[in-house]
Length: 241
Image (cartoon, rainbow, N blue to C red; front, side):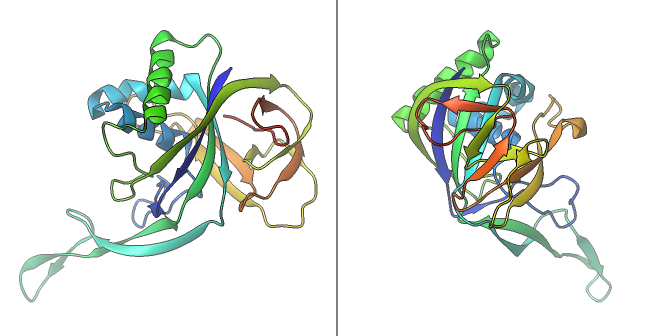
């Protein structure tokens, strides 16, 4: 399987958990669906055609994330139109109340993106165009980390081949699934349940969420289970979804 490694980082990020609409919380790191949105921004794909790109790339791309620093979250209040409206009986007017949102401070990720063997031709072209754009440092729209006020910086590292291993003990700096069998660690692990598939109604299918475990600050985790060997990473392996 062909793949690339990127570094993606910024000052702030917000990857919304859909079950927290009133005061949105964020996933701990960039999700697969958020990454597909970032790919669409780099390629300049408008919202309407993106409806079909989400399920296409959800099925034809795989990704893995190494969280390079500690996950630090802060809540900020914003006044947004048509949200949290309160009627003021003294002035007979509508007051727009602040809405609390959770943000990740200084997000910094190392990411592997692979395209499945024998992909749909349209997906393969999108992947190739994205790789070419990143190599040239060009983006048609500003790539973001979940929200438009969270711009992303993207660095191309390398490209190579990903080899699938059905089972085995491996060391990784990225996330793994809850089905992997970890060795006992002396550092704290993170846990999250992340979306892996978005349909053409911009809906993350609940049955396609995956429980993951991850180290942060580039700590490594030794586990047993399925994984991928990336030709440029001699010491560490990747679990991709």
